[in-house]
Amino acid sequence: MGVYPTSKALEIANEQELDLVEISPNAEPPVCKVMDYKKFVYEQKKREKAIKAKASKVVVKEIRFGPNTDDHDYEFKKKHAQKFLEEGAKLKAYVFFKGRSIIYKDQGQILLLRLAQDLEDFGKVEQMPKLEGKRMIMFMAPKKTK
Image 1: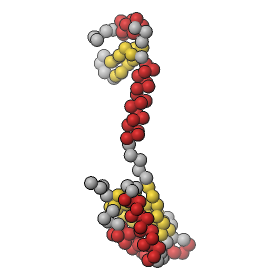
Image 2: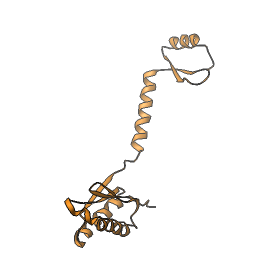
Image 3: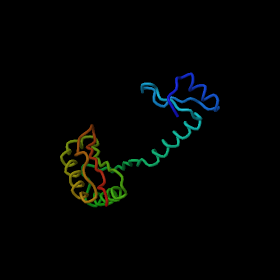
Image 4: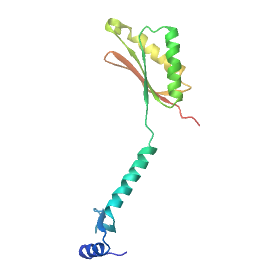
């Protein structure tokens, strides 16, 4: 291993029936390596695939409420939300206002804040309730378990 001019490096690569691969083109002088290029590309793809497999995929589960959701339905949906957070998924809870029910937006906000308070042991609020069009949306992320 040494420092060679480009022509000498190409000559060495040809003698060994391998390729001259430029590793770091921005370095001064550029860094090249004599190797099998197809094997190099294969190893690189293999490394990228391993990194991708280790990366955790964020799952977002949704729960929809109406502005006048009664207690039984609320409790039922709260149990589902709790289960989603325990599984490690993010939760997107929203109140959908149909027609003129938009006049109850304060009730929708109260409902979402109540949900956040009931689930504070399982997750933390990422985004407070915010009105977007006909929906009031709130995001919750699961708490890290030790």
